[in-house]
Length: 588
Image (cartoon, rainbow, N blue to C red; front, side, top):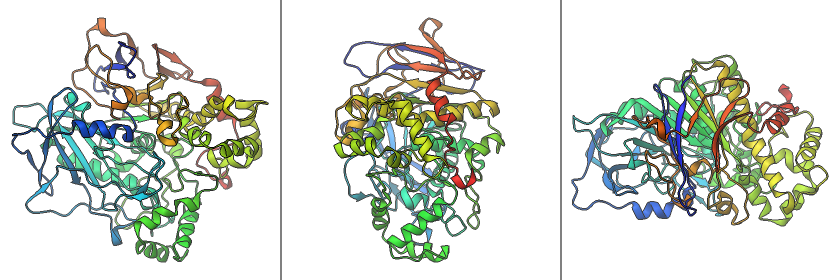
């Protein structure tokens, strides 16, 4: 097994990000850099998104036509080339709604690729807005490169970013995740927008709408990268995919799925794996959700073809706007439409998730030879705790009606035959005899961190290490930044800990001895750099892969060090519960 060499330096108390240098031996990931909440980053992205005056307009020719891009400026003043709003699949409109993505049509002339296109139709999970926004014509990606190939330059490693947002909201546009920080380095960056909510994840459980359309959009984007990235100076044989939350779980699904095999070479999952409690619909539940959606929009609930045909005639914004009708307690369940196990294929298409991800790992559904980094942040549960503690009545509900609301918020209502026992044990473990209130807020954060992120990561790395021929690296981010994702989500300034909006996203990797920028300026990505090996004197910590059942991991906080047994008591507690995430209780 190879190890990753880290150089960690601190400077100044007004900085909120670590400088993390990751060096590799062999062909493994070599740099780590992640980022922050898109809403906060938007302003900085706009400020840096300036066209270099007087420059020759950059043009490329991809498989389906010619594109005109623009020159932008990085954080450190480096000029780079941007192509935004590149179509990688046909608009999924009309009969193409609820179908796998199709290759785009060829175009004549030179298309303008100097501006972002619209996010997919959604209602934001990140902010407090309630309006439905976006467009169904949204299957576009952005490419950023230090320079176009001139015949003498080396090809560069490629990073492909899948955004988070619970498969409910988000986008790969520069207003969400701008390129200005990573393009200080020699990489080609691709950010992808894919279908969300019921438009991306509705499933009738049969050939009428098998499901997982948003994940299949990502596969189409990866195929586009293989076919076209060389004209941007990128190396199609050195592609790293990475993402956070639902984007991180998406990365893990691509590692598992036969449909993605050969399209990338490394993966990084931040705060999300395919075995998390929220990442797969229990068998049978997706069809029920589809029928419920149909009823809400005055469509027939059967047969499936009639249901789907009718929903294709409804406005996209009306489909998304039904999300409030699926809520059983405030905004829960937060993710009504999820990935599914596909029992049958759409005509002419292949299946993306052929079995439960647990079985896909245990049965070695494909050769697992992809190096993988995954981990979580100490305050990831602040994502759930923040909106609850923003309203006194919700805190009271959680305290007084724990047996009712906990199974909804933590996804075990459908996946356990003993929900009352599970609720009692959870409450005893995290709160004992104490009430749930402001004094036990951090116990609420821990509870949601463990249910939503830790338990799935713990199980995933244990199983992945056992079957993978490539190394698996594990991390725990506990470094305090200046901003909280929960502040954006709920408006609260309460300290909820290091959630995925301020955790590993604060890491920006540079080959230099400096801290990166503050959290509000950090960008949400990670990159692979080709010549990473630092001088040995610069290496403060060597990140070792997991080699034993002790689950070695890198602890990133005020100190950075290797440790083992990440939150073992808490992880073991969840493993002991009579709950099998993502399996319907009828299957237990």
